[in-house]
View 1 (cartoon, rainbow, N blue to C red):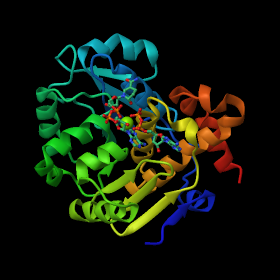
View 2 (view 1 turned 90 degrees about the vertical axis):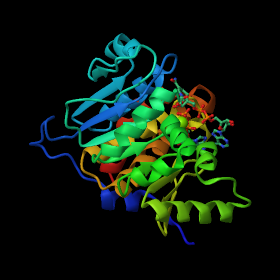
View 3 (view 1 turned 120 degrees about the vertical axis):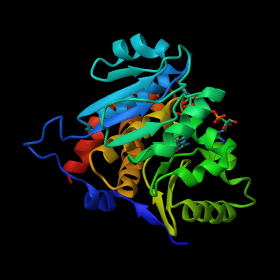
View 4 (view 1 turned 30 degrees about the vertical axis):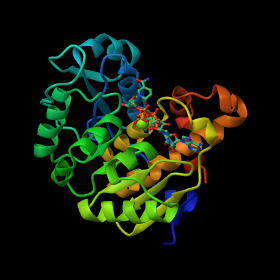
Length: 282
Ligand SMILES: NC(=O)C1=CN([C@@H]2O[C@H](COP(=O)(O)OP(=O)(O)OC[C@H]3O[C@@H](n4cnc5c(N)ncnc54)[C@H](O)[C@@H]3O)[C@@H](O)[C@H]2O)[C@@H](O)CC1
Ligand SMILES: Nc1ncnc2c1ncn2[C@@H]1O[C@H](COP(=O)(O)OP(=O)(O)O)[C@@H](O)[C@H]1O
Ligand SMILES: [Mg+2]
């Protein structure tokens, strides 16, 4: 298994400059289904980062208790609320997003699990699945067959283990993840240091990022970036490759200014502009 290195050349091949005649209505609308009581920060971070990655419109779908939190933290993000106060119980909306993310801070209440099931059963919109939505799928593995081909999953090592079981060696981890990607036709963003992306037999290895990213909410933000790129009509694999590269690049650019210690997930969002500029100015 020889990986393709995700470096600047691979990104320039995929990068779509912004058309000067574009407008918010055609720049992509993303829906971020996230948050539960005490974990609304995950929804705030993912939705803000989604907008800061070029998406024209972003809507967050959160439990009722998240309404003011979202509207005050992120005035540019629109907010829809579930009928339940503290967790999501029924995912229903009348917007037409081009990409959806589900999972950051979602929790795993039984009603949330049912809502995830009912949603993935009918959803046809390109989807990014993270965090508790992955854990819910791990508890209900027969639901994996409901996912559309090229759905993007973004597990960290513990979430990956819950999905595919324990591995004995690094090579075994790759074999199992490739088999899992092939079985369901999924794109797997295998988060780590470094992150690898598995698209059936094809393996990509990221070249950006550093230990500053080992901080709460770092993955929630990655979900927002990838979802934004899918909404802007990048193919799922290209969105995953570009998103992982950009996410790591923010930390590489920030490090001399922030130190490893003081870098937080909000800094990923803060440094996105410089990351995009460094790709444009090649
Ligand atoms: N501000 C917020 O609202 C935040 C919400 N979050 C949400 O909190 C929920 C729980 O997520 P967690 O990921 O903390 O919980 P998990 O139980 O899924 O993961 C934590 C476990 O995974 C292990 N782990 C994580 N990364 C690892 C790595 N790189 N290598 C080896 N082991 C690793 C940890 O040691 C720990 O045992 C998710 O829904 C998440 O989105 C977190 O993202 C933190 C911030
Ligand atoms: N030491 C490290 N070097 C490079 N990247 C890292 C390191 N530690 C964590 N990351 C990255 O940070 C992100 C962490 O995601 P995750 O564990 O889901 O965070 P959270 O759930 O808190 O948002 C992943 O993209 C991972 O690759
Ligand atoms: Mg996470």
